[in-house]
Length: 116
Ligand SMILES: [Zn+2]
Image (tube, rainbow, N blue to C red; front, side):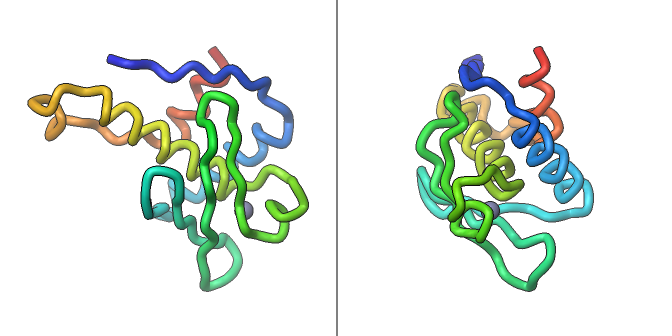
């Protein structure tokens, strides 16, 4: 199985974004994959969603169209999109015969890798 090495340093901003993404996930919020690079993540406060462009999972490079993202800040939308992107990479790395048995990667599990 392919593992994804996070090479970026995890700032307090990322830790906060990961915690919020995990809380949103626990509350039932789910992002949607649009294509290889783009993910639609629901807003936590408004009845809308934001599109996140993921450039690099390992370097935590993602750009969100929300207000925070437009100002270059880390947001939980980006965190959630990165966890979805990481899951997609894992799926591609699997032999086709194993794909139906795939477990989902929660944002919490994704964030836990940062601590290792
Ligand atoms: Zn955002």
